[in-house]
Image 1 (cartoon, rainbow, N blue to C red):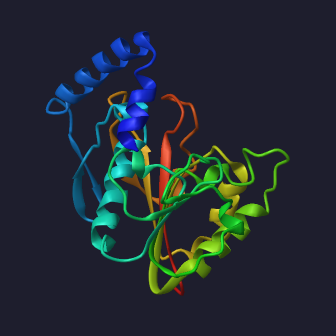
Image 2 (cartoon, rainbow, N blue to C red; image 1 turned 30 degrees about the horizontal axis):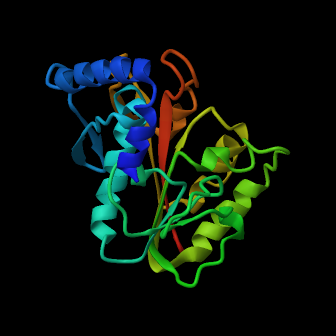
Length: 232
C-alpha cells in the first residue's frame, strides 16, 4: 500500500523533482540539527519519508510514536482508525477508514462510530484522524466526537490501550472535548513545533493550546498524544 501511494505522487513530474530534492535535503540535514525527540523518557529519531513530506510536518513525530506502540503489540489484535500507517509500513492489522473505499483485505470503508467489531482489541491507533470526525463533514456533527471516543473505549479489551494523536487549534470542538474530559485519559503528551527545521519538544498540557494552527509555521504547530484505556 505504501509503495502504491508513492507511485500516485510520481505521476506529476514537477512534484517528483521538487519533492525528491527537498527529501534529500531534509535527509542529509538531520545530523546538523537535533535529530531526536523525547517521548515518555525515550529518545526517538524524527521520521523522514517521501510520502506526505514528513520532514515538514507533525508526521515526523507521530509515526515514530505509533510504530513504538505497534511494535509492543504486533502479535496481538490491533485496530487503526484512519488509514495512515499503510503508507509507511506493511500491515497485518484491521483499518477502519470511512473515506478509503479501495478494495482491500484489511481496510474497512466504514465510519468508526458505526463499526461493529467481531473482536476486542489490545491496541487501537489513530494518527491525526479524530480532528476530522464530525467537523470536516457536511453537515457538521460536533457530538459525533463523543460517540467516537465512547466507541474506542468499547472496542478495547480489558487491558487494551488506544493511542490517538491530534493537532491543536484545528477543530475547536475537539479542543473543548479534551479540556473538558482531560481526566478520562491515562496520559496526555504534548508537543510544540519550535523551528523551521521541524523540531519538536514536549511541553505542559496547560501550554499546548497556545500553539496556533498555521502560525508561526505552516499548518500544525502543536500536537497531543492521547492515551485511553478501558478503565482508568
